[in-house]
Length: 249
Ligand code: ATP
Image: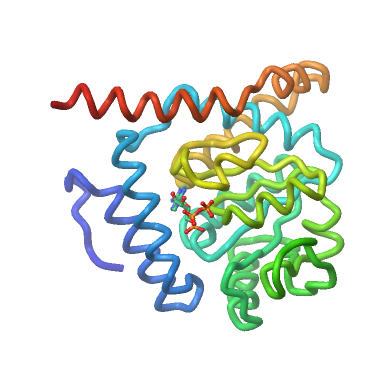
């Protein structure tokens, strides 16, 4: 990886770019993953590249939903594995949740590469290779998933999902938790809980909440989930961005 001085004002952002760029070279991230990353970066810039209190709350509620689930699954793609593979694995251990590889540009080779990468980081079992079930309402390869994984999950955490798939998961009756820096995306608007934060901050923070909330009883966690108003959350985020922009000039 390229040498980036820690004192550089954009250190975190440059390291993240470097990781994504390496992952494209290694075949983990599809080239269009670079474009998706760029869109994310632009929104992170508008948000001030930090976890806002409302995002922290969404991360807390997401953790509660994962802990209350019967069969929670963390759905990962190339970008997520390139950026936060180890944190996803430890989050899956804490909840406990399954991990499934789910790709927009699905090829057998890339699914295998990503699964191997997760195993190298210590994942005990990675779902997504069997592809023995389909999410109804999506065209061919994007609909593929594992029967024992996403297909039968009640709660699915989808960091960086596309709108069609998150809508299709909702139609299947699942609780969808999205992590997406863009509060305007179809994914953000169709999820039950939307975390407007960078996946590099969100997954470690959900993990932190996991340690804290694990000892709470189910009624307390359920109360947190019930009071969550996702539309209000998205409105707050858009309003934060517009106020911030107005205050800059
Ligand atoms: P939708 O189909 O939901 O309207 P889209 O077509 O804009 O979304 P994609 O290109 O499928 O989205 O996926 C990219 C999404 O992921 C963008 O909304 C972008 O903001 C978000 N994103 C990219 N990188 C990150 C990141 N590191 N953390 C969180 N979100 C990210």
